[in-house]
Length: 259
Ligand code: 13P
Image 1: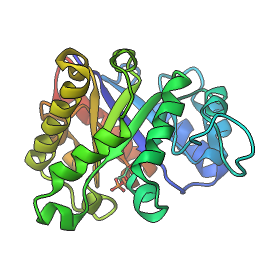
Image 2 (image 1 turned 90 degrees about the vertical axis):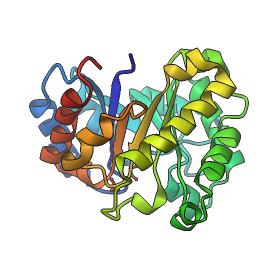
Image 3 (image 1 turned 120 degrees about the vertical axis):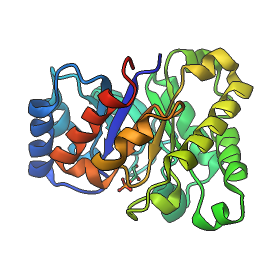
Image 4 (image 1 turned 180 degrees about the horizontal axis):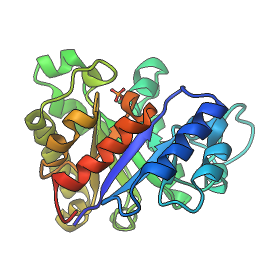
């Protein structure tokens, strides 16, 4: 049985004080038996503040970005080993904002995937199509290619250790208030699992958590999470509000009892 992973991607929001306040508020309000694994993903600049605030709680720490390199003359970069020193457990790779605004290619992202896994951290590989790609029925082609290139060389052994999470984030649903319907999301999640099965074997693929992201909120979390191949949510805007984020975590308990 896959345990839900509900992660809040704070993006480039919240200063130090605000990050501290939100992290403390989540520590106090999240029920101890959350039915889901919960992670917060603050800006790199406040990893130290947030890691202290959530210390001793079940909330895990994630990072929004990582260097593709291990060490050396890479000004401005932060390595996976450095993230691990902060207590980071999950690292986002391939978020659409990095693909489309910062121009990160699939081959570059593949190096980051390996950098994360080689450090024993879990990668959350984000994939998803643009609106015009969906309208031309290219969703599976785009997502399939992002998986194939992004996961090249990743072993079934790494997957079995739980070091791979995939997040399906249709670009047209991110920050737009327009959520994929539960059926649209489930269809792509099932396709992703099929591709993972082809690469890693059915048993390994069955253990991979596939999150949905894109205007997820308290009011739509339960119906999304009730879908057979939706194993969590990667939440942007709604994760900045304690009440919304806690509501999403609570929705997980009702969505698939027993998860
Ligand atoms: P929103 O929830 O704000 O649409 O953002 C989704 C996202 O990009 C999470 O990584």
